[in-house]
Amino acid sequence: MKQFTNEVARREPAFVMRLKRLGSLHQCRLSFMRILTRRMACDGWTFSRSAFEIDARGVGHAVYAAKGPNRTYSLVAFAHDLPSEMRSDRVIAEAWDATFTLFDGVPTADDIERLSRNIPLQEAGRISEQELSLSRANRSVRLWGHVIDQLAKGQQPDLEKINSVGYLMRTTAVYGSGKFGAADRDKIATRDEMQAPFQAEMLSVYLTRTFVRDLVQHLANLRGGDAAVTLDPAIARQLGIGNSTGLGMAPFIINHPVLFNNWIMAREEAISRVRALKYASSSERQLFWNLLARSKLSVEAWRSKHPRQIEKLRQLKVDMTALAEWYQGDAPDQEYPWDRLVRWSGNTLSEEGQELVGSLILEPYGHLVDGLESCMADGNSEAFTIDGVMTTGDVRSLIRESFGWALDMNWNDPENCARAWYVSEEKLEPRMGERFEEPIADYEQPLAPARDAALAFRALEIFEPHQPIAEFLASHPEHRHTIRRAQMSQYAPYGEIRDNTISATVLPIDMLRAKLSFFGATHFDPRSDRWLRICMFSGAPYPEDLTEKNADFWVFPEVKN
Image 1 (cartoon, rainbow, N blue to C red):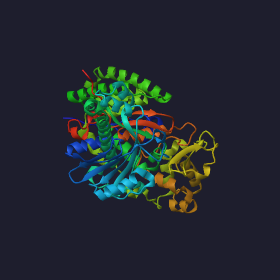
Image 2 (tube, rainbow, N blue to C red):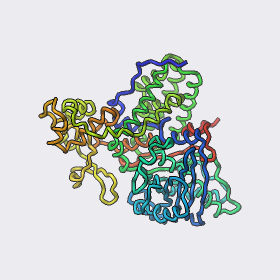
Image 3 (cartoon, rainbow, N blue to C red):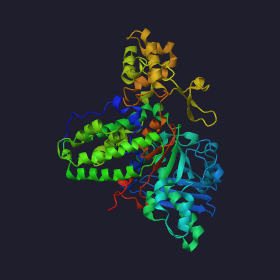
Image 4 (spheres, rainbow, N blue to C red):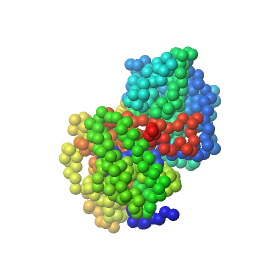
């Protein structure tokens, strides 16, 4: 029987919420892709393809249905014949190789006709509450033609090329939660299968991966005729869905402090629970060791050309060797082995290595961890209401708790306010510019909470500590957003980034990685300080192969004997 201690508290927000650490997070048991595949397998979901009307040019539509215990969701996919000169991953693109929607239910012929006029247009089209997501994808120029050519000739694609790319298509956006007319989150939030965040979007990507595999096989069969062969299932399993993610996603974790807090707090609570275990059984230790070996394979296959990520990978490989050596000692047999491991990693490994340890120790303990997924959505609407009765003294204390590090910073120093976030007029997407080089200050978005907290803190100095905050806001309404965030911190201690988001040295890719790690992404590949590429569902079983046995650890590559 396992024994617990109350001595292992969650790691402090001041430690966890630094951008460098957030930019080193890895997927874990609480990542949204793994939550989805576990649930679908556990609940016995069934899958079918009700339409696949694609011609020899690769143009047409397909429908894939995923049926759970209570309802069915359908991916409606449209394939297009896109000239290469029109293929772009930028958000300003107007055409794509494929476009998709996740339909709530089973679409009728009239629905398909309506969607065919709108989904290929993406933002320029119109969708309804029957649609839960809107997405698009482009072919991998390096891999698409190669795979079709090889299969058509009766040969399997080159494994080195498969491993170097990792996907046949990459999405450039997966929109949901009411954007462009899709159903609001409230419509599905109470459904068991959609309770965890981003489950509709993850399901869309999961089914998209199946469509892409089927499409490339279809085109190879048409080209090769009787000579064509079927893509090796083992190779197909390696292929995920790529994703190009840029600045549009970066402000999300600033704009949703309660939601992001819930993600981080769930992970930190899970780590704390495991660290509090007095002993680890032999089977638990063995599973950790096996997954550590599989993680090493994943790290060895991780490629990036970005100098910062190259250095982080170099350090991570050193960390993996040190971790294996530590674990082969007698420490796992002693009391509180996981707490010992976390403490050791904090003194020995890089942030990349430390956060990989934090994720890996959760793996043997689904019974302790997985239930936390129900706490990760944002259902606390009361947190957004300003409490006007709270005293100014209490508000100042809350600001000091989250932003004490920022209160004495010189916010007039150009280095500390070099950047400004704004929204582009053309695509209504977030952008970050140079404050002193571009005329953007007048359009700045409230995405510098540390600076704004310092300004509000100083403005509060002339008010008596016992005065209600409503009196302050009556004369200083410009600080409403800061007061609201300060009060939110009572419910969301992990809701604030403890770094300057407008400094000359800020790296938005840290914000992107933090969010994408909770999606379950792997092999983060920054292409600049403002955008990166990832791979989703690589290694996952396809719908026809999904079982409770393979629904979880698919994210770790298999060690070949």
